[in-house]
Image 1 (cartoon, rainbow, N blue to C red):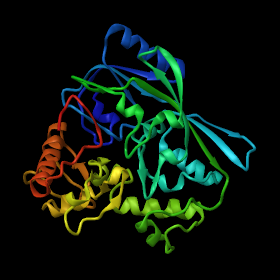
Image 2 (cartoon, rainbow, N blue to C red; image 1 turned 45 degrees about the horizontal axis):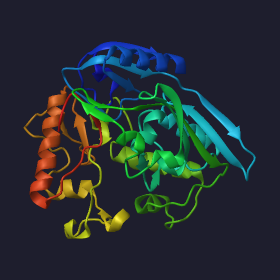
Image 3 (tube, helix red, strand yellow; image 1 turned 120 degrees about the horizontal axis):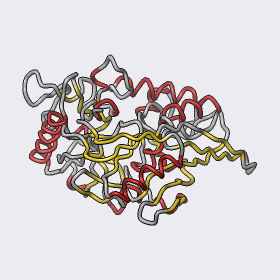
Image 4 (cartoon, helix red, strand yellow; image 1 turned 30 degrees about the vertical axis):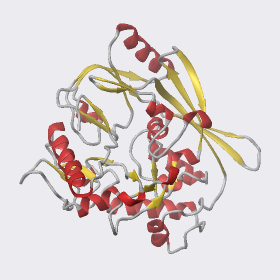
Length: 348
């Protein structure tokens, strides 16, 4: 089985072995058995943040197929605790949250992948991050050989970062996590209105001022429309969506490193965040850019931050494109773009 079939980029060679986990016990057993044998392990959920080598993965791929969502009303000012297993498709959970008026999920609509991946990357969009609603993360600690639940403070969330991500070790086959996410618990409250709108593009689409609260259904509809306009909502018929989403993170640099005219937003420690998409475009990489004519991989025709498979791309094609963009931006602005996807068996 080629891993291309399990990733949204649709590239990647064969796995030595595939194990399907339909329960938490199955997931733990698959990981623990592979660790005992010294076999590399790759846990796959939605595959939306993976770039796998054409040579494949010489180890055990564990596919988490659990899609359970549990709700507890704790009775404190309408507070809710929602626990979703790691294999639950993220946008299905968001859709359920919006339909149930669980506030705080709505701006994260349309993000592909599984729920278990969201705290690792601290996924975010349109002014919201998953850390805003995470209460705890239930994990299998491979080093301790035990189940461990990490409260919010232990997750140490940062921009597209977390303790879960930072405790990965890097070997021949890519990063190996110490903690395998098994379930995520979110804390929010019942509300028909959204969290304050924090992103100007979303506020403009909704016709409101920043900080306004609007019906959560309207936020979800607006976010899905915005994402679709950028090719960021999965559609098998649209090659612009055959991607890993935003391929590079927005750089956080000293303010004097930001080029004139580039967006800048305050970040921690006196640094500022600027736009990777702006840097790519102003370094000369237009929508649809490809390394060679008739290339099998190109920048999206809708958004320069997505690297896309035009139908028959290989991992090598995607890597060549990523290197060209990264090196071009560095040559033009002196800023090094950092890839967001997890790479398995390849280096960018």
